[in-house]
Image (cartoon, rainbow, N blue to C red; front, top):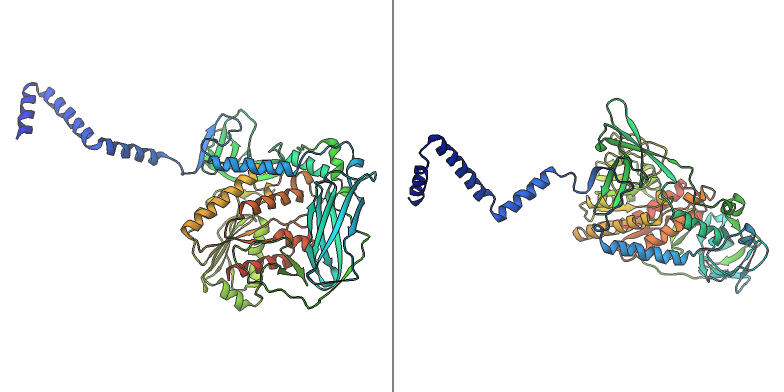
Length: 558
């Protein structure tokens, strides 16, 4: 009643009909404001507006006129930045700068000396054999510092057997190389000087100097005629850029924005090695074929190993077990783990029973794609499912509909180095792929990372590894029974472009991965150890190595 009296008196103040209408309209607007824009609802309304016009919550496309716009350090967790800094500092201490004037003053495999400690006529299986190395330069002078990149191996060609040796650097020009005698028979010893310490120092300095050893070219959809543009992890230009940013994980990829074409039209990427080097001209002599992978122990006689009745009880392979070095050995081309007991999974029924109702996600490079290419040879019921992609780096899927088994391989995100044109329409970094997986006791994830990151500054690799670690921790919070396995990098040809692809880079990345993943309940498939043991030296190892990797994986999940 009071409200009606108030309105009647208010209208009486404005006898004009038009004034009445205007007053009623303003009163309606005031009522709407009071109802919808109270303090609590006002906040909700503005937030809903903001959300309705935002792009994807993490992967944004923006045009920029700023060159090389780096990830915003204020957004990145301080913890991650500190971890990256600490790891780099440790590596800088591990790989200090070494003076280089000419090759004659660098480590020489021919002039260095190897001495077998405690030699005997025969040894027992399981014994450890120690060799002391005294490194000398090409003029026969003793080296006074360490840092040489060595690869040690014990092997028996007749038995198709091999294992890695462990190298301890005393940082004074001497090394202790320890070999475990895993099998009986005649065994030979090998220590290769892959790079002298001066070469290692040059590689480490050069790696962390630039991003431009690889040229990225992006293909943008533009009607019937695609447009191509320069892309990369950083771009030195003042031109307008398309930025493809992951704000949470501080990952970035850039392309020069093509005229009249939106950034969202990027569909494919391809790469070429650039004619760029940060190795000094005189240092290239260190990476000549004659100076890479030179044998130090070529005059050593073979050693006889007896069974001696020794045996060792070990538990079955499980996730979370610490992988020692060496982690195992090959015998008759079969990998035998040194730290856990493997089941023989060589019958189709056994493997089928293991894979029943499993969801398996393979994330990484083409060394893991080899698994999905080899698995149908092991399990005939696994059939390819075509996802309509194009090229060798499309997402690959195997299905066994009867047993409800799915196995998927998907390449990791930038950088990915290949001359083949590959799609980036559904591209994702591995942490984001892990975030999309619900997980359960029948879900397994296998991750490998490294080969495509060797040509770039080490901070890129460290950040990616930390982001993957955090994604696994999030996965374990929502689904602790999910099985996660890390496949390490394997070795590759020694004579590939050393600055970009030397196994020294892979070795350092393996050390980083082991350090970052040390406390996680994950399994490790030591592809590095396997390929050293078999001396394959191929970025894509032969089928028997791939089969050994898969067998180790099945032991973890079955």
